[in-house]
Image (cartoon, rainbow, N blue to C red; front, top):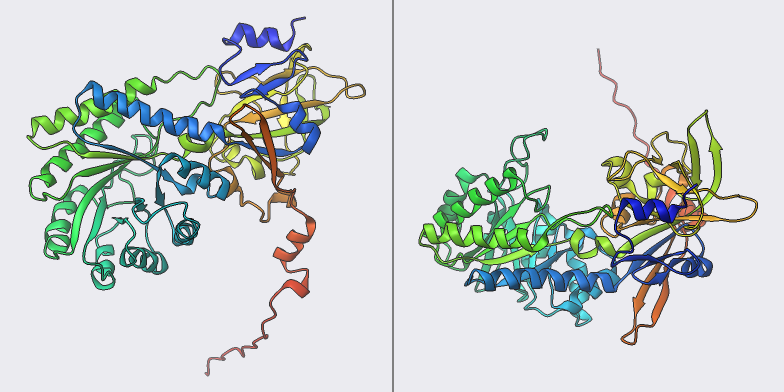
Length: 484
């Protein structure tokens, strides 16, 4: 019977730039020996490999630099990171080492911006693009940033938002952006995005609310596609429609000089992933240049706000297989010491696939399996790959050896969607989280960011530890009885 390494060799080209195995048939992730990490910290374990973040940022800059040179594009390129992908301090601080700007989504992003400035991690000249539907506290924080001299650009999401800034912003000059509501993909539940200003209202919003006030400049138009940047008729149609609108508005709004392309580049979700990043960026730049030339309008500066592409491939989750269960004649379950529902919520909520590989025993025969999580929910499982309807892992003897498995490129959104450090389904605790870095001489360093969540922290959240709960007086309300 063939071994697991033979299955991989006949399925994909292996090793890859990112994955390899050592002489002990154990997996290396970016040349990090994962079994050594497991021996040191145990499982379940989340890891963040920081050098991958900088690698992707610099690669994106190179892609746009190449395209700008190729088409003699006269605009500039600015890389922004959307903090909602991962708010962790070690992630954001690693990102801004690479001269990156930031995009926010809620009021609670703004104290992070203030903290970064106080620590001298960012300057007031750093672009802060403020997206999302904004409630009063978010509007207040944005206005305060502008008044304090930050290079903050609120992206208008509706027709009323500008009224708050007109009344609250006291700075001599303030830049404004408008998000345009794009049409959703044909198979989506709604025709047009609920976010942004519809095309027919953009010009009147500028003429009636922004242009009359000389303190405000319409600096940017924002474009967002949920599916991200991909080579489809839908994407190119929506992008072209957007650029034509930019050209129309530019002719009556001289200060408009930038576009923000939201919805990022995809990350690798399979070892058979095939995406020509340079060709896609080339076509974006060429399309913008062609439409602007056709309309006799100067090309805009290009901003992107990449989240998943920035941090997704830096993350991994490692589990131990703690049991084997044959539930009928053909369905074999490997049970992990964690939960997909709580720790990889996209895997069941959106049927998102990740790169799944065994960490050890690559020299052993393999078999078809299903992976099951610890919760009592029937949806807590993982049983297919992005490129295959089946899942295969090494055969092992529980009495003699242990089996570990890893899910890779999990660095975006999973902690925030899963409610990091909060209350999870069946009270499954958040796992340990380890940061992996590499010194200039190649030495690998590891640091424990957080221990596994404790029962005490859950009891505190749930109100069982009364000494840690703020007591409030009980108020009795007498029911009103309707008189006859």
